[in-house]
Length: 162
Image 1: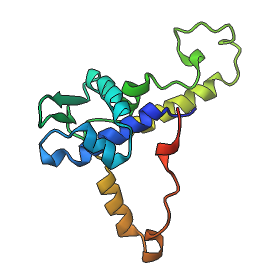
Image 2: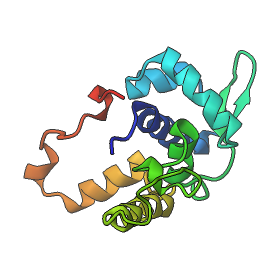
Image 3: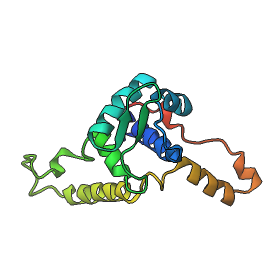
């Protein structure tokens, strides 16, 4: 299973909003695009789904932008992922509404179902606050020694494609 670019960028957008919620003012997509090095036009598409899911609120006008619809502690990563790409599913046959002629004899179906359940459980365990870039950075810096602080970033999620 590969997480879509939509889901990854949506999480980054939402975490940015969570990290800056203390400003109590809407944040423009231009600011988010610049700060997160994400395509502005793509963010415009993503916020539509996030707004429809009730995760963000928009404010119109010159000082307009977006805010979280709820506290960052209340919004789970699973909600963001599902708002951006739909239900998390490893295999279509795990859906009970999908007809599968091998359902009764498939020896690996149970394993795939358990894997899917663990993925969704983990995504549902983490709130935006838990994923806060500022909080994570502070925790890492507190635990790193001087040599590790200068270590290169290993994962550059913005280069992944959907």
